[in-house]
Image 1 (cartoon, rainbow, N blue to C red):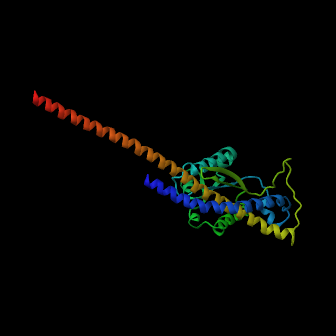
Image 2 (cartoon, rainbow, N blue to C red; image 1 turned 60 degrees about the vertical axis):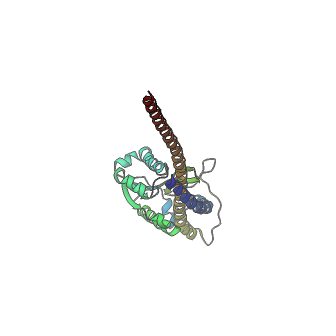
Image 3 (tube, rainbow, N blue to C red; image 1 turned 180 degrees about the vertical axis):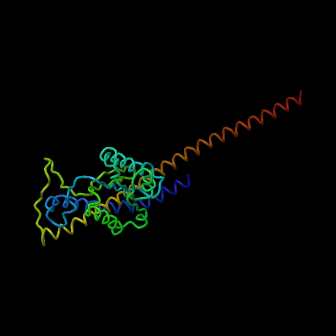
Length: 275
């Protein structure tokens, strides 16, 4: 009970910092992604438009983001189940051909997919110092693989932080970039003014947006991990307290029964001597 209570307090302290980080990043990342999706339809003839080029899907990379440690309820299990569901429902044929690979972020996904999936790369060190530069390096490697034709589609699976008790598993298409849809189902096409010119802005905007999207996913996952662990340790502490109360009650009943038996034996012995 003391251990789980201490872990709960540690996670609560870390959660505050992680929550502030994702709260500040999310509006910027979502707006940048919206702008990127809106202009992606006009990038096909531009050098930077390689990331919006849709090709026949022959090989897929799934980025599975989990934590390095457990004791956080179903946080990691939900992501792993989500990845397996995607493989089974969307890429069963490609998986049978060995054309579905996993980029495992976090020790839990690395350990899980060592025997269950084809791991392309792993990274368990990023949580030691999670910042934009470290996340951007991973995203850049994935972008390079996509631009070189190693993968035709890249998906991102992670826990989105909603609150301390709720994390929502997200399945996002990381690459290629697709245009957003309006309520009528047509691609959104806002009239942007480009300065200095469309080509230069798009070539710089696309990589930055992709790196920001990946960094946001990492921040979401980190905040969700601390929230899930705090909630799990809170429940574990409550269960330990309830168990302690039950054991104390059982102990007291057993002690009282033993005392009663001893008193009866003494009384019985005294009566036998009197007789």
